[in-house]
Image (tube, rainbow, N blue to C red; front, side, top):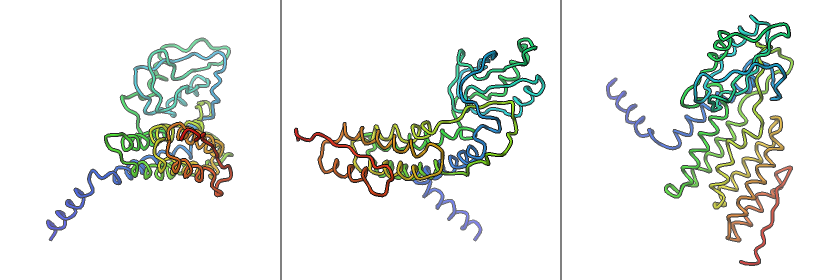
Length: 289
């Protein structure tokens, strides 16, 4: 009976292996975990860095070419405490780096000299660089993977808009996952400064490619508008503004591609739905049709 049970479980596993729905769920699970971790600590335990580099920074190059997979914030904090210095992370996990593209900068106290090569190497080693991105500290990666699945489905070789529509649902769940952090909580690494991920970057990773390649399919555009609308009603900072912006761009791409009047009218109705607080409208000159 035990052998029969194991065989039945294995047959059931093989039956689900390779299904698109299973792949989408696996990607979503990983991406939601990454997004929750990001929302809990958007600056990896450090303090926010607005991107404007202060004067007196000693810039540090990556030790090799590739994608930043992980930043050891504890190691950076150890260096900052040892030197009583501030360390600025210039590239977040997921960024592609190469010689000449600085990954970090260190600002020593005014009475200190330039950091020696040992300190520079110690800071550089805190950045794990690999050939591929991963989910650990990169919440944009899951959105990118989902978007790439949709692009393959929309390709002329596959022509599967249904999968692209399913992807939009997964994307919404990923982007709204996680709880916003307590604003009054002190950072664990106060002297390590990390740049924020802009709301535009989330929407760009999720929707730009799909709205471009799916511009000729009214059903895909309509579901993208529904996804933007849903995200616009979340309490995540700047998501309301970005949802309207990307809905407008999605409609504009469809406007340049669609020729069938019925499809245009369907998108007009979806863009001007009463359920949205900021309806998107557009008109196409159809005198030539």
